[in-house]
Image 1 (cartoon, protein in one colour):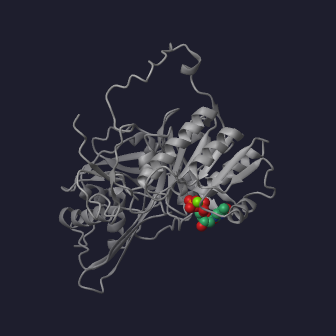
Image 2 (cartoon, helix red, strand yellow):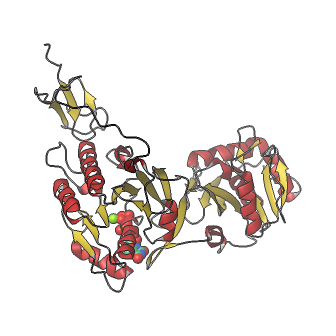
Image 3 (tube, rainbow, N blue to C red):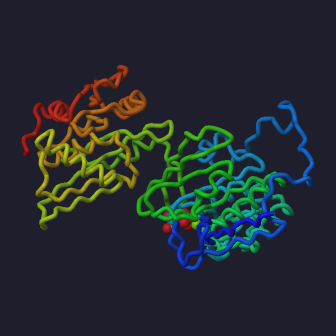
Length: 459
Ligand code: TYD
Ligand code: MG
């Protein structure tokens, strides 16, 4: 039999190559390429006579029944999970460091342990003293049924889950776990994959729901939670700006329910508190009668959230003016400035431009285009936008206003918050909404004329 040609793989990112190299072509790590040794036992073969056929089951069997959900007790989290946690399921909660993953999970642990159920908190990230400090910040009395294990060996963790059979296990984080028989350092792709698979097996066998924390870095760390997405049952993302107050918890994948649910939280001194009326909260401090401020509507899962878009212009101090975007895409801002100049005669080439989606909200969505363009025009004209006017629509390069998804939900949200006039894309097919006048516009120029009677002459 011909011996298989050697295969090399990177111990950091798991990429495979047919040639050895000093540096991995995929992830750029040095000295991580090693030869995969195939012995007679581990060389893959197409048939293996040692395996017996599997046992078939009918769809009426016990194991094919719908899984039952156990609520976590945190209503907002239960909404995102379509009811709660399923026994034996693995949920990955991912997000940037400092966003509040450990805080949210400490709250879950306290809530469940307060009902007398055993909760196991396994951490390799923080010392017992650090966890205790967080817990005492969140509750007066740490429940007696909340236990922690300060171990990073995944085999010990799996054995503990199987032995203790807690009501819930939290592992903070998967990047700190290591498997002694897999290659690479803790947090590398092969390690994260191996640890994820071992924990998933332990969860399934002992019917214990497990929540894994996955750290994501701003530049999308290669060993991040992406490699686990297909192994786990549910993937949740906690998003927001760590410097700001608000967080959105979003289901990206959910095997036991809808992945369209979101929850809105505010980070307070008492941990993450659910915000039930996000639009009202985000518009609460909106300045009135100030130029450069408009209100638009984002869709997060099923719900509509009104947010304020702001623009500020200053005289450019350098030959290349400053363009700074917070919460909005900077390339999109550049495109909108070009369209404003070319299609509506609003030229800011000699101005510094600052654009901001208020509240640290990620508004990188084309439906905010019109609101941002109008805020820039308002700043240029130094004329405020009347506070009862809402705006949404995508802008094309020809200055045309394009329809966006779910217009009726957006209009309803504007009407609920007392807005009386909404500027919407033409051909959007919006239904009439009580107490709200919808004005359809075909172009950016039309929109500016609707707002101020005539396109502001700023060019
Ligand atoms: P943390 O949950 O540790 O973030 P992650 O696990 O995602 O890295 O905490 C994030 C921040 O939240 C931290 O800077 C401290 C702050 N925080 C509060 O504002 N209030 C609180 O009640 C707690 C526990 C933390
Ligand atoms: Mg943490």
